[in-house]
Length: 255
Image (cartoon, rainbow, N blue to C red; front, top):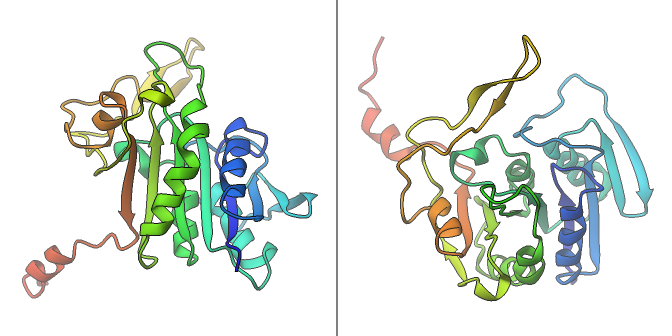
């Protein structure tokens, strides 16, 4: 039986990374569906549009956009309505323009698409193409194009159960120089990387990441991607409870 694949992203349905993800998906299956935001939803995290009516636009028999919808909205609409009774086996989110590393995954709409996919019972995989921001903000998609299918195949073959989703980042080196896949933890920063950043317009400001908090763990995703040139894969758990701490604190907290 052919795998059914649902694709979403947070850069919008017309983003070049989504077209790359569609090519990756079609290397896995001929049953590929796209449900994506109509525009950019970067930084939306796992926002769900409770209490707000949303509109579905149909582009073709298997491609839909959600007007003002988040990636999580798109996966919900796909998995509980648009795909009918045969749900997606795999939800692919991306390919994002720019890396999603460390604590940044907590606000990433790309990661949230994969997370909601896993919560809906699929294998959820988020993919992002790294950018060397010290050189340019332009995206070289060649690493995602070259290694995306193999990375997806490797994760799908290794996935066990539905308690995890997977965050994948492609380095910005030449694809021929990519060293392979490194399965790594995400970088926990010493503090949040998000900061107030003043605008040139009086009274306005941005929320931005002006610099990466230091120090960085040499074995975590940031350094393995940027310094070593690996495709990084980070398995993330849906169960966020610290079960060891539950056991330790049980019976010790009283009113």
